[in-house]
Amino acid sequence: MELQVAATGEPRFQRVRGMHDLLPEKATRFRQLEEKAKMLFELYGYGEMRTPILEPLSLFERALGTTTDIVEKEMFTVKDKGERALCLRPEGTAGVVRAFIEQNFRKTIKLFYMGPMFRAERPQKGRYRQFFQIGTEYFGNPSPAADAETIQLSAEILKSAGVEIAIRINSIGCATCRKNYQKILLVFLKKNFSQLCENCKKRMERNPLRVLDCKGDSGKFPNAPKTTEYLCLECKQHFTQVQELLAAVEIPFEIFPHLVRGLDYYTRTVFEIFAKDKKGSQDALAGGGRYDGLVRELGGPDTPAVGFALGVDRVIAQLEETGKIPMGRSSPERKKIFVAAVGNNTIPKAFQLLTQLRRAGFEADALLKEQSLKSQMRMADSWGAQDCVIVGEDELKENSVTLRDMKNQSQKKVPWDAILSALQ
Ligand code: AMP
Image (cartoon, rainbow, N blue to C red; front, side):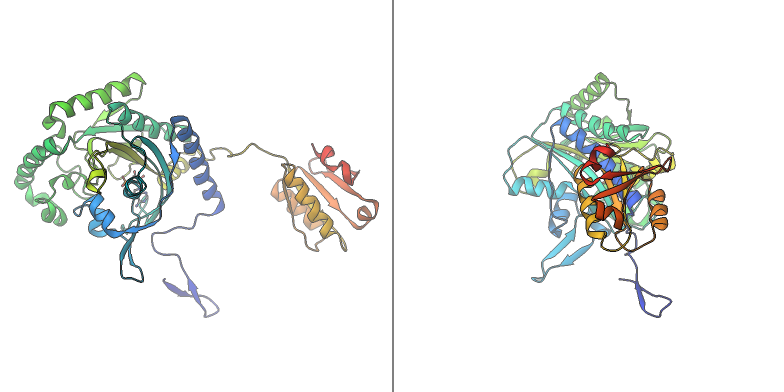
C-alpha cells in the first residue's frame, strides 16, 4: 500500500496503482451492461458460474503457456500460509475449465461468468491492473456452429449496449497444422530478427506465434506467412463453415490472417471485436476462440470448447467517449418520494412510512434527523422527488401526513391509511 501524508500529518491511504474505485455512476453503467449480458445469456441457454479469484499459480502456467505475456510478467502471485503459490486470476477460462474437470460437469454445458481479473500490466488508457470481464465457455460441441454462436453472442452484447462494432476472425488450425505454420513463421522471423523487440528475440524460438500479438511487434510484419495458408483440410472446412454460418445470420466480419490471440490454448477459430472507429490491435473490446486441447491439457477428458471474454471497462469507456451513455435504467422508472420529519418524536413514524413506501415499490428517501423543513425540501428537490410526505407534530397527533406536490408546490393533508393510494 502506498502512503501519502494528508494535511493533518496523518498517513493517507491510496488505491493500488492501476486499480480503480468505481463510483456509483460508473458502477451503475457496469451493472447495466452486466444485466444486458445476463439477459442474452438466458436467451442463449448459458448458466452462471462463479469461480474463486485465487487459483493455484500452476493452473495458469499450464493453461496459458509459459511464453505468454501474462505468465511471463503480469501475474499477481501470493503465497498462502502453507507456502503454496497462488495467483489472482488474470482471466476466466482456466478457472472454469478447472471446475469443469474437478466437478465432473456433464459433457456438454454452456457457462458464463463475470467479475474482476488482475494483470500487472503497465497501467495506461484501457489497460488496468484490475478490470472486469464478462465471458462464456461452451464445452462439448466441436461444431463450427458453436464458434459462430459464440461470436454472435459477444457481438449481440456489444450491440445491445450501443457499440458499433467490427469483427475480425481467423483460424490458427489444430496442433498439427499449427506446428507446420510455426516452422514457416520461424524461418520468416529469423530473416527479420533485427526488427524484433528484445522479448520476442528471446521467446521467438520457443513460441514464434507470440511475435504476431506482441504489444510492440504486432503489425510490424504485414508480409509474415498467413495461418490460413497452412490449415489442414479439416481445419480449413471448419473455418469455411464458421464463415458461412456468420453470413447466414448476417454478421459482418473481416478475416485477419495474422490474428493469433495472446494465449497458447487456442485452436482453430480465434476472433476479436473492436469499436468500428477504433481498430488498433491494443483496443479490442472482446476476444475469444476455440480451445479444443485445454481440458485435456489440464487433466480432463478430451473435450472441445469455445468461449469469449469481453472487457467491461473498455466497453463503458467506448460508450462514454461516443456519448452513448446513459444506457438507460436497469429497472423501470419509479415515482420518487421524499419523507420529511419535522419536530419532536416524528422520526420513528417517518421511518415507518419510509419502509412502507419502499415495500410498495416507490423509490423513497429521507434524512431522518432534526433539520428545518426548508432544508429538507431543498434536499428533496435536488434528489428529484416528485412528491414529499411531511410528518410533523400536528400530523402525528391527527394520524395524518401532509402531501406536497414538488412540481406545483400544492399541499394537502391525507389520513395515514390513505397515503399509498394518494401517491399512486
Ligand atoms: P483477453 O483475456 O486478453 O483476451 O482480453 C479480453 C478482453 O478483456 C479484451 O478485449 C479487453 O477488452 C479486456 N482486457 C484485457 N486486458 C485488460 C486490461 N489490462 N485492462 C482492461 N481491459 C482488459
